[in-house]
Length: 84
Length: 404
Image (tube, rainbow over the protein chains, first blue to last red):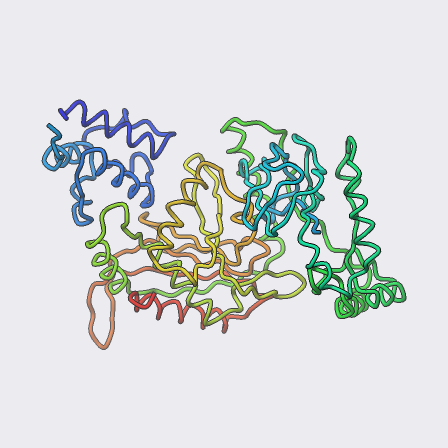
């Protein structure tokens, strides 16, 4: 996936987890969970969905590396499993 | 044959609207089957049955308003079961069986026309008549809720000690006209929380205790456990907290129960887990039999129940039978939560966020992840000593996560 596709997929997944928020309003350096008020349970659901969508396996110790939209996109860019 | 009545889905509930029957007369149902959908302040709730048998007449029409306790339908259990209860009044059972066969036509006001059938032993009936006790108001403790002699004697005693005292009606806001908009559910939930919490503060003399727990062992165990799991199987700290509460309740059972004319201890441990809604308000679904579940099973239950709670799509038992409440504030900056007990429960356990703090132990000072645990308890039901025992046990269990 290219950067635009990754971003759209993230927004889509966030909307699924927190339907009443507007991920499109996120600034690159906003803390995603704080800005969208996502609790630990919803966050875990998001990680599960993200791992599935990008064909990766994010270990718990990496949660600190994916707190903002920017860092999350970088992380996915590095770890996603390219399917072709 | 058993009567199926509209269950109470929380202290704040007065009535619901029957939206859809999921069964028709003649259908076979088992314990846990969904027989109807009822719209309440807390969304559309699946109504479960707790008996096995054949559905009888559907007494309530779809879209009727159904006050708590209203007869909704009958469940015909097997004939053998009836045979086993010689102490029950036979003519009465026969009479109701006949009544059921007649279709209930156009019951416009189910509220004012409930079918009264009281299971009671002949002896209980005679004593009740002699002592002037209204047997329909006595809670039966015999087979299938039949009123027996002991129940009447208890009622007689209560009548003597509390002359003229009527049981106050449950406090509840009138449910708003049915609507499906999210906005109105948000307002309804606000009103439901308002009603339950007002009643709690009015009726329950709370006492509060708190302690701090070094969470090093629990978090280390959790990190290790999650390292071996893929993201979809990972555990959240809430699972350990729930498990530790259940274990502590096994040690100190007085906090697991309801206040209903005295402390009624509950054998099962069903923990009401507070789920905040992003649009405001809280929903408190019951996590059933927490003491019997492994951390992995509990995590699966949470993964099922939290999204359904947020979507306002719960089952009746999940809103009706919590025996204690747990609230966990998660990662915010707040360390301590002093809860308001959800009646008729007698305790609420509150977990604050985990923060690093200086921690003295064995003459040494170090930095540890520390969590404040509070207990709000009903002083009518227990005293500080019991609360102290409970928090001490809870703390011990959280220090031994591998045992949870």
